[in-house]
Amino acid sequence: MVKICCIGAGYVGGPTMAVIALKCPSVEVVVVDISVSRITAWNSDQLPIYEPGLDDVVEQCRGRNLFFSTDVEKHVAEADMVFVSVNTPTKTRGLGAGKAADLTYWESAARMIADVSKSDKIVVEKSTVPVKTAEAIEKILTHNSKGIKFQILSNPEFLAEGTAIEDLFTPDRVLIGGRETPDGQKAVQALKDIYSQWVPEDRILTTNLWSAELSKLAANAFLAQRISSVNAMSALCESTGADVTQVSYAVGKDTRIGPKFLNASVGFGGSCFQKDILNLVYICECNGLPEVAEYWRQVIKINDYQKSRFVNRIVSSMFNTVANKKIGILGFAFKKDTGDTRETPAIDVCKCLLGDKARLSIYDPQVTEDQIQRDLTLSKFYWDHPEHLQSLSPGTVKQVSIVWDAYSAVKDAHGLCILTEWDEFKTLDFQKIYDNMQKPAFVFDGRNIVNVEKLREIGFIVYSIGRPVDAWLKDMPAVA
Ligand code: UDX
Ligand code: ADP
Image (cartoon, rainbow, N blue to C red; front, side, top):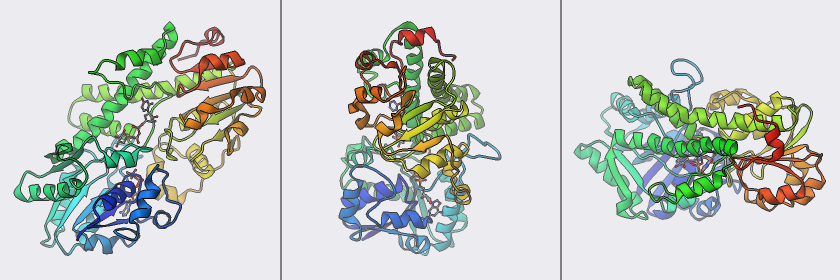
């Protein structure tokens, strides 16, 4: 029986290992983490992450060939293959602060693997890391190996949250990078043998180490670039009277471009896009390519611009002041079907509105009150530094109340903002909402999910990203 140990029971490690265990009954998978609360949750009925279909997969394999444990060293020592899926946050201080990846967690995991290993191992890099991390890790492992052989592989994860299980069941591709030596190729084959139990051969790509590492950064940068491109267009649409949904539909009909990832929004979020692009920018700068770095930096600049443009629209349409006005916030997660708030545009939008002294009533079906308060009080990038988080108790922002249904969030409010495209927001009774709001009643749709015409008929003043603007808003041009 092949034994796999995965260090890091997070959004990537947990679902990926659960699916490997499900699809490969002859493989024993142990997911380990230093966080006791996370492991306790994985062993309970209340899993630490919300992901459609995950409960079912875990239920089928937990206790059979899938285990969750805090005994990191024991399970690493016993494994044939060790996946490393620990945090790789953006540095908050020192050289490269705000851009470079902090590899502290990775390095300590690598040193621990070298320390406890008594047999040869394949070490698989799963978290997104800067190009050439594998080489650095290889050095740490071999210099501390006491004669044990380590083969390092890069096997970046392409799953998206909310569809993780689907993505893992039928991936577009599985990428395995390894050394081009006979031992390296043997290790690549060993990992390929695992995936080929459910993924067709032609979808399993093998490359060298650096290509695999860079492909992950490149894929995320390309995806984010599409969103920034359509968001840039949305600003032009608003100024010219075009409708961004029609433009992106027409553009996406070109089979060379394709229809996916062309939805204009208040901005992209999530733990990967910004972090990976910042990483890419830093790598380009370090390699003497400032023009290339600047090109990719623009993707983030447009994303920031989009978030501030949205807030400017809110403030300017509400007579240039939101002080003491109640604004209902519908959705806080960075996208629907996840409770994840990492880098969610809602944080920036809410912080700006709070800066202008608005009162916020926030509803998200999957995000806890504690998490929202934490997000609104922490500084940028702190979310991915657990050692800081442990020493901080979540603050409380007094102007914020967290409620448990959409109607309470918007009751007596002057305006409502849709910041996550949860399906339940599409079928709200907007007449009822209108009747219970202050007048004029404003809707700011950051996800283009409402029926603008219908809402205007009810009496709302509506702003929907990239759509022809209300006469009201035209009279109150947003400050860009
Ligand atoms: C992303 C990549 O898709 C995945 O392959 C990688 O492994 C991790 O990063 P994820 O962050 O989970 O996955 O979500 P994704 O679906 O890519 O969405 C990212 C952000 O872009 C969300 O905030 C989403 O709302 C936004 N988005 C997406 C848009 O604004 N418009 C779109 O058309 C698509
Ligand atoms: P991702 O989204 O990439 O999965 P997460 O932050 O959700 O990232 O998960 C990373 C996990 O790795 C966290 O639960 C953290 O506690 C764990 N972790 C970090 N360093 C170590 C380590 N040295 N040993 C075990 N677990 C670790």
